[in-house]
Length: 306
Figure 1 (cartoon, rainbow, N blue to C red):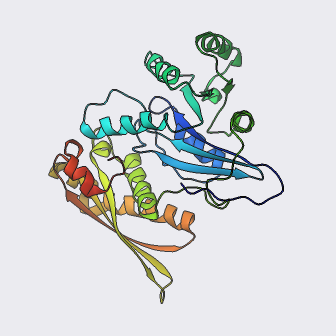
Figure 2: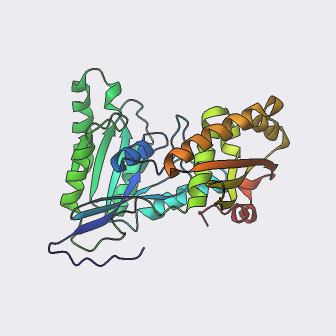
Figure 3: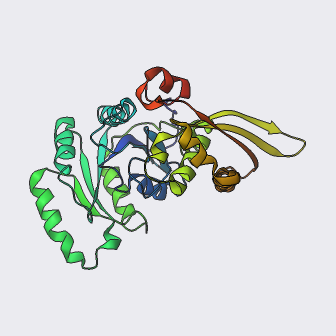
């Protein structure tokens, strides 16, 4: 990251904050709704986020660089092991931690997250997410009491990331924690994710939302080219969807190409909304056997984990 020198007449605060937690606790939804725009894809399926994604929140004298990390889980494939490794590395490079916890679906694996926080020894805020699913808010009191005894959190904040309830409290607490210093990014920047990766993630999200079982986890998306067509005022995007087996290729394409067309239409519509441009999206599907287990294939796909 490049520091932006500030010559304004007041002191600025800035810092890097890791969003960590188990899969599917709502980290990406929390980040998107804090920023007011979509930088991290979401789906009801666990392990949607595959690599650390930076989202930048800036107001007058405060800049927070959030790092949305993959959900920490017991990883079996090489690819998933690298995902978890990238999440753990993020803890070493940040000024503070947001531990996002699902108050509805509690898990014994939370103990492992707590151990990571204790080892990191960084100021940490515990975010109790999905309180919109709790009918009687008094049920939160034993959870708050339990965790307050386990670790000296800077704050324990019940929120609903989906309904944007309590997000302002998170920002206020982070402002207290973060050190004085110059901004990391220009105030207009909301993410440093390259355009090709951002486009690939949107396409992958639509596959996650429309396929089932192992299929969404077996795909990778690589954007081959993004070209301006000035005479038509169109952005031409060509991307390849990689699957691990030929049988999965048929599922992604669908009968008569219907599934691929649906994925392409949904991705194009969202990209046009996000980029404020007319998009022509050209999708191809190819088989790349065992890509999740081979480092050479991961490098070929350009996944930012190595």
